[in-house]
Structure formats: structure tokens, C-alpha cells
Amino acid sequence: MDDLTREMTPSHQRRQGAERGLTLLEVMIALVIMAIGLLALSGMQITTIQKNASSFKSTIAVSLAEQYLQQLENLSFSDPLLTGSATSYTANAYAGTYTDPNTNIVYNRTYLVTDNSPIANVKLVTYSVIWMDPIPAATGGAHQLSDCNANVHPWNCHYVSLLSRIRNEAI
Image (cartoon, rainbow, N blue to C red; front, side, top):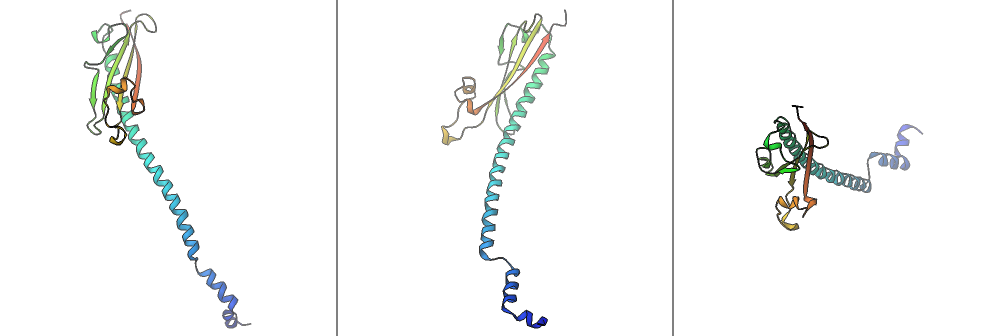
């Protein structure tokens, strides 16, 4: 058979048609597989955005705690803001509330001073920052930050605590 005759045979024509493209069924199956993959990626993207926002809030809280704890460490050992046996401070220059201007999240800052802990002439300072994620109205509405302290809604509250020891330099 010469080349011209071979091109004209029905089996050769069928084979060329099969090699030319995909059937509609193959295209539909490929689209379904791609759609499932895209849906999985979109779910991961939403989770990533939520975790990124949570990390941002945690970073602000740790920054606040580090900043004020360092300022407390620079005070004199006998400073009135560092006195008391297991005294908790909630409202002074180093404690109270801070509202982040970007997120409007309110952070409650407190610190606890424990004298002679873990040894004599050393003060243990525990600096804590507490904040609360907004609660959607559909799940019961807004709650107060004080609810976090009472553990009314601990699933919605977040805590960061840093410890420091301040020793008496006079000794």
C-alpha cells in the first residue's frame, strides 16, 4: 500500500480522530477533579487568614507584656509599684486596658508581684495580658472582657503571661 491508500483506510481514520482530542466525558471528569482541588484550597485559605489574624493579636499582647515588664524591671527594688506580698495590680502606669487602634481589640494588662519568691530578696513579677475575640451576634451577642477573668467564656478569651525575677541590688 502506498501512502495515499493508507491514509484512506477506515481504521487509520479512526485512530487519527482518537489522537486529535479529548472526549466530552474526559473534560468533565477533569473539571470535577479540578473543582474539588480548588474547594480544598479555598478552605485552607480561610483557615490561614483566621490563624494569621490570631497570630497578629498574640504578637500585640506579647509586645505589650514585654514592654511593660521591662519597664517594671527598671524600677527600684523598693518602688511602691513593686511592693506587697502577692499583690495584684490592675490600674496604674503599667497596668490597665489598651485598645489597639487597628483592630479595636481591648487588651487587659495586669501584673502580680510576689515578694521573696523563689528565694529571699527576689520578687517574682507575673505580667499578664488578656483579650477577647469578638463574639458573633448569632452565637449570643457581645460579652465583656471581665467575662474572661471569670472564665465565663474561656473559648473566646486569650491569655499571655510573662515572668521575671527582680532581685535586690543593695544586697
